[in-house]
Every structure is written in C-alpha cells, then in structure tokens.
Length: 402
Image (cartoon, rainbow, N blue to C red; front, side):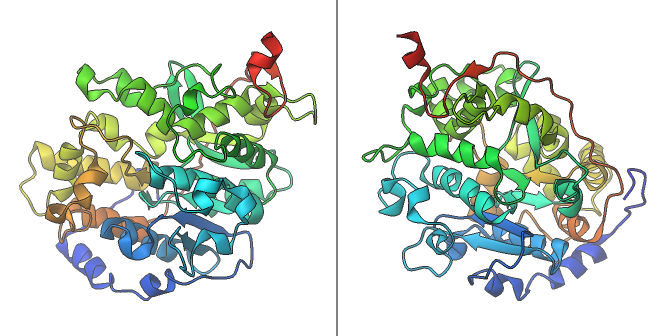
C-alpha cells in the first residue's frame, strides 16, 4: 500500500481479527514438514513451540497467513525426541559437541543455539530465516526473494543492515533470505562453528578468539544515544553475545588465497541490504529504546481520546504499514535498566498486550496480514572494504605476524 493510503479502522477491525486467532496453523506448525521447494521460512525456539511465548506464536501464525501456501514455515527446536528437532533437517557435523549432547550453558543458550542452526538450514534448503520476534508486514517475495531468483539480478543474499560503528554498516542475522548452496552463508557458519571447541559449552570469551581478536569493537545503535552509562551493556558481554556478527565481519574482511573467495567483494556486490532502523526498528528511536513506552503506545485504544500519545501511536502504525518490512521485537543481553518490549510481553501481566482488543497493537496485527505495500525495497549502496586480509578462512591473523 502507498504511504498515503487510507487505513482508517475502528474497534470492529480488531474484533474481526481476534475472532480469527484460533487457527489450525498452530497445530500444523508443531509437526515436521517435508522440504518441497526453496520457499521455506526457518525459525527456531530451543525449548519448542509450547514453550514459546504466546505473542511470538502469534507472530509465526501470522507468517503463515501472510505468505500463503507457496511458502512453508518450519518451526524447529532442540527438545530431545521432538519430531521438529533440528537434527531431522541438519546433520550433527554442522554443530559442536555441546549442541549435539545438550550441554550448552551460560547466559545465551537459546540465542546461540539459534546462531548455530540458522545458516546450515539456509545453506542446505534455501528460503528465509526469521527470528520468532518478527512481526512481518511485507510478503517475502517482495523482500529480496524475487530478485534473488532472477537470473539477471546480481543479488544472491538479502538482509538488513545496521550501523555498528559510525557510518559503518553490517548485516543483521535475524532476517536473511537466500537460495540453497550460498557460498557466503556456508563460510560464515564454518567460522562460527570453529569457535566451539570439543569442550566449549558457551560463548564466554569468543570475541577474544584468535579468529576474531583483530575485529574492531562494535556497538549497538542504542549505545550511541543512551546517555546513562548504567543502561549500556558491558562491552565484553555484548561482544560475546554478538560473536555471530563478529564472524560475519571476519568473512567480510577476507580474501581467501586458498579458494579465491573474496568476502569483501561478495558483501559489496552480491548482498542486497536495506536499512534496518527504517525497515525493522523504527519504533526504537521513536521511543528512545524504552520498552515501557512502546508497550504503552501499542496498548493505546483506537477509540481513546486523540491526545498526544494517541497521535504518536497512530502515526507510527500508519508508517509501519506503508514503510516497514517488519517489526523486530528484540531482547538482547539482559540489562536491569533497559527494559525491552519482548521482556514485557513475556510477562503474565502483558500476555495479551500484543493483540489487545481495540488497541493499536491489534490494528498492527490486522494490517500486517491484510495490507500490502507497493513501494520498492531499494538496496543500500555500501562501498567495498579496502582493508581486505589475504587470509585463509580459519587462519588466525596472529600466525601471519609471527
């Protein structure tokens, strides 16, 4: 739909949406399904569908409704004996011992299990990876897929880019689109897998690993605008949490003399990126990254007095329908002074806040399925890195300095 399209609604739209929530997709998503094409959506919740928070389940159900029968949504897990365990799709050789034997520990077991499974699934089968915290607004055919399958297009991998240092952008790993056999995806996973030794059970210290120690520190967009130092997550904790991104940065900076693969050239010419702060995270700077304010805005009722809060909620929702590909509701490393929207929606008190009857949240849910965008998704133009290292994929930089 156009940015100026008429989206007027009232509580009846929300009620109609609520009436459709009990759908057969929920039971269907708990079963294993054959891969019959490359139009797959892959996602993962390590403890299984029934342990997933209801708001995230509604996200996934709505993917099915938005995408229709041409795309198959696969929800995988790491629950022993589960018929949707990732082991039914990917061989154990793609994972470290700690994943295969269930001994992963530390602060970020779920996120790092997700980091381990997303790239092998894309490399083997193709399609899209989306984190469960994604509210989808555009059809995947329009989010890079049609370009990727076009023989005349140079695009082989699509994603969203965020500024991790001033004027320096890198690709997020929570929303990726490609065909099977993608060479960048496989090498990225090989680097990450190599961080996990036979006895490694968590990611503590990963940012100091010999393969990554030369990578410049990265920071989140919120770190650059939040003035309270107590609200900024400790650097070492954040870098270990983002080790998967550091592996991407390593690959992006390599020209491998062994097989000739130039990561910098591939990143600049074969990966199409759109700006994440516009396409996925527009709600964050609007609210100074405050989950409490985001929750308050979305819980505002459509029939409330049209005060300043109502106007802000209304403007945001209309912009989301017209100008965002999705909303990524993220957690990140736990920080007692920075409350994320996902943490609030996980709580019993707000278990229905993402779709409360007559609210802007419910309107978002409704529009994400029933409204379509007509704007083109224009790729960013990023310059090729000139600091390429002539280095083997798994060759530590220190070996060259000795």
